[in-house]
Image 1 (cartoon, rainbow, N blue to C red):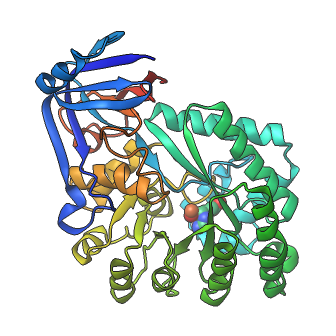
Image 2: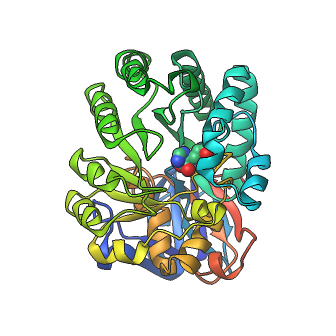
Length: 414
Ligand code: NIG
Ligand code: FE
């Protein structure tokens, strides 16, 4: 039994209304200018003004007191969309893009996702584990305390299971909470390029059932995009995943509008990812269905694309979450502070909206809001001490991480 008291922080935490915050509530934040947090056995026992929390602390014996004067306290970041499990970087492709090649052109030449597939297939489980671990610990140092990681660079049953096994190991061997997503439908492997339907059959008849048997992934994701999976194929894969007990997500309208956002609403996907090219009609359908928009502004930055229309989504009542998309191709960053800064500067979200998007709504996007995402009594004491006056610091102090200390379950971890 350990009880710890953190005093004199300027606390910013989302209000958790029991569902993702949207519209007027997208920036619904509670502020305690002179705040304190009491953590007991890793959970939040009390949070509020110093006065209130001290009153509560008098009833228990406090083992450790930390003075947080001059720092902000916010919940640990929740990154609900990453492809952090990969074997090799693709910096050469980035340079090709800078020289004018498009993401799609590189993919068509056998680069892109398919080159990551070759690297993952060649790598041993230990090699894959080491690269993934490095990415995950870097994310932790930037304040991410809960993280989703997708498979999808294996594209055959043994290699997909190898990735999911590595993700499971990462979850056991690091302090972070890790959530696994099966994304066997990330690209059509070269050997199926003339017969994509047979690959969809393999996904539905072999891979999804095997992932179910292993009980190794909670979510299923599909890359619904021109040149990848059609909306019809995506629907079939998501429905097979749902039948196998997985929760659906979908990469939708990242490059062109194929109607992925509408499909997300129809199949009651928990979230739709990217949405750079989504049309307003389908965004409205998402708002009605309560589908979370997982926005990944680092990808627009890295691909030099127009950013997703976050203001429109908020106006329509779509709950917005933020994620890094960390992957070796379309966006290589582990930094939620970077994504936060882009959301404010390039998508014109307010700092408070971006804070809700990167903590509470992102926790909802991976079904972890009962545990994390806000500094609420009973949730995990996962929080950051930040060198700034307010969450605006993440946009203001550009190109660095203002995160000074990272706490997971009340313990200092980075
Ligand atoms: O979210 N769009 C599909 N998947 C990733 C890119 C993966 C890669 O290029 O390796 C994304 O952008
Ligand atoms: Fe992605």
